[in-house]
Length: 171
Length: 293
Image (tube, rainbow over all chains, first blue to last red; front, side, top):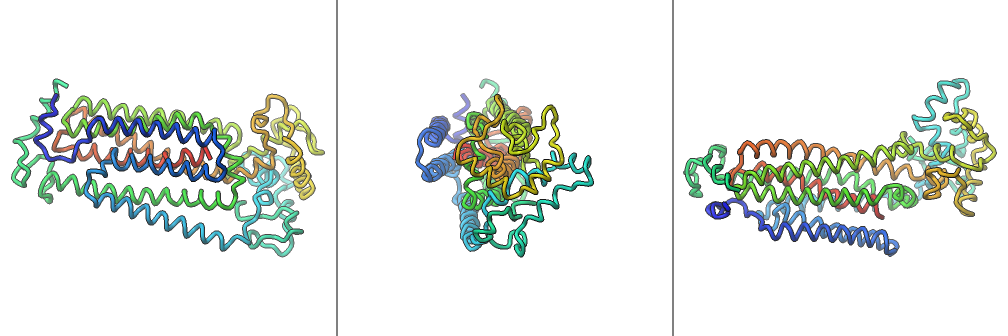
């Protein structure tokens, strides 16, 4: 083997083989654990937390050992951690912001119905319109929007929400 | 492993650790190979941070939509095959392992091992994309595409055994244009009626219909559209990265085969390896988020 030659260099630490195999095994085991807990054990909302917890462990193993952060200069880790920190800021601020808009969020069952998807999808609606150009189905649906409610402006009241309203999710 | 020693002939002299040993691959503005490698790796890590932020936008969309419209995810995710997803996860982890091993082989001057392992990594990426192709075509065949390509509720309405006061389009792929209009005119009533129907029991589809499998009504399928838009954006962007990674690792494979790398100069293997590991890292999060929960 040529391993002896490698010792004469001061190149980045070549990861020991047993560590690579151990990390590979750990990643496989954790994948099985993720699939098992998510599909066989019902923890309700905690399934998401558990799956993300395992994913963070797996990600850390990949970053630390496959990506050599364990041996690397700390600068590389700072680049990764600052990226993740800004990602956390980004997502948490967005989530907080959506709570501000909660009153204007329309229920999906009002926004997305088969009729509206039929009207907006390009696969099925296009041939219909070309064959029956005199009967445009799209404007028909729009007329059922509650009066005085511009698209996506606010959540309709109880009585209004009975009729389908165009929402921000419908392009 | 016997031909490994021949590879060291690319070095003029043993590396003494200072600026005096001018390695042919050492750029003039660097003191040493060590410094050059460290600078390259730091730059790659900064790039990877921007990659994380780019995916972060889509992860953020996932988080916001899931927090607001959990129904969409609850209905949509069961149509993804978690078994195929698991196989793909294992393939990607295995390819990440062969990549890390390949980097080690390059650092230890194991030339043959390096290119073989890099080649296996490319094969892993190809296997991943192959399975992804099967998944995508299955989704599209059922009308479960992103955005306006999402026509699953229309497919499901075709298959309804009991039609709500409308003509069943027998023997014809096209829905009569009239049905869209009548449905719109019926508007409120038809939706409410279907909503009540959902609660009383699963909708009745024709025998052998794909939609019997999970028993979602057309209305429920309609609500899953945002999930599939996010699914296709996330996996599409990730798949694009896998393709780019395959090209890069393939390039490294050829260079390693031609003996361009040795114990002193292996930064390209290392840096492309980092990219490949990031692709794996992102999939580790995508898989449970999309397929499992």
